[in-house]
Length: 356
Image 1 (cartoon, rainbow, N blue to C red):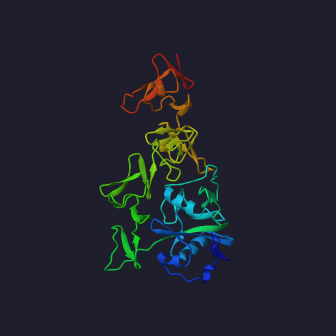
Image 2 (cartoon, rainbow, N blue to C red):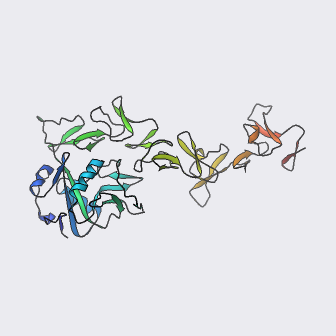
Image 3 (cartoon, rainbow, N blue to C red):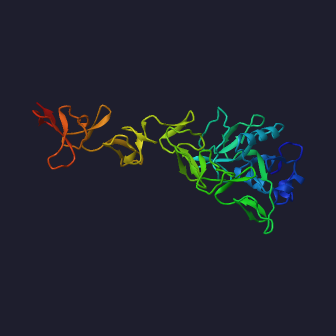
């Protein structure tokens, strides 16, 4: 297997090349391009290499697969790849329920192609040369990549790191746990201390009282802020409700669910996991004995009438319209217990219904 510089002007055997572990010295060996405190270069192979193999190749140069965390960084990649022969992968993968960069931060900016298909197993990201739009691809069939090395800032006991959220590790300044590198700056993830200069890594968080906190309308989920129903969202960060989708840049309840405050609650016969997810107060989440997914169904002693659950005779109720029998009303019991549906005056129970 051979790995070479993607521009074609230089071809080398990576496994025989001796390079320094510091990124700022690799420019002596390859035509790296500098941008915002980092060096970038592209590589290709004469055979398919999985994602982890390409990541290992980048680590030989003291770096990793490149990020494209901003429109500006993606535009820079577009400019340097204009003469590359092959599309290439970057360090963005679908992990769990979201797209994550290889430094364990969620993707905020994205540049997916309009016709991108998000299919099962296509968990890596390919960038198209010249246009720099992204497509999800299989992580095992890759023949080109782009590496990024952040230029090391040397440090020691007498020359400490100037950034308050960086620490001196192995002779170079690196962001502390709870911070992510943005250009040459360490920005705080949600829940970490921050200041007005460094700011927060999430676009939906603010530095409040010295800590990155999700804005009103957003909920903390790990190190990111997810949008509540009705709030602005993007495809990467997504919605806090399991039953909402980011549609037209706003979190909206799916079909079969209705908005209840900042949540989406299930209509009758819609999927659920717990009874609290049902929109009808007289419904519960019933799971079949042969399955794991439940649906919202009327509780015992309640029946569907007009699309909602109404109380049978002698069942608890709140108002007259909550009684299934139109000749019944919601009456208080003499004992002071919950109201129940009982036949109106001059009506009696006959065959389970109220008759005059």
